[in-house]
Length: 170
Image (tube, rainbow, N blue to C red):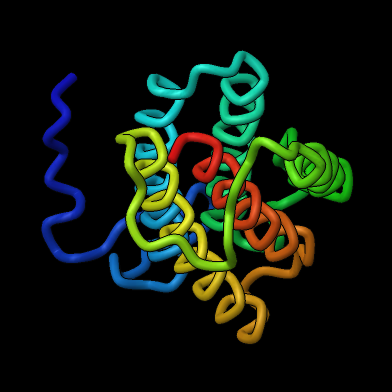
């Protein structure tokens, strides 16, 4: 089977469940941002030195897959999804944020302009993509395309966490 299907040649593509939509639809904007975010997190996993950081980033990559799947699924089909991000995943990020905030070795001001390592830079790029993803999810929530309030909480905490981990590697 070829990767070239030609089904998207007319600027439309299918949701995971649901109708064909134009490729610039907000749902696909969210999925594209998450795809980009995942790519930079994948680079970051290769660079981080801490086993704990690798584990949390791997866990985040799995969560992002589920968020993207939910974003690409119409509401009436959500019950078919095996996993959705919820309070437990948000709590996991908050716990790790708390742990990093207590680490006296991490020196971070509110804003860091430029990181001195590729790892810190990759994580900072991922943080900015998470912020863009957050804005897209807010738009989808306002339009009632997405109803899961935990998606916005998760992505918001994720950008904070990525900032803190990036500071470890500056």
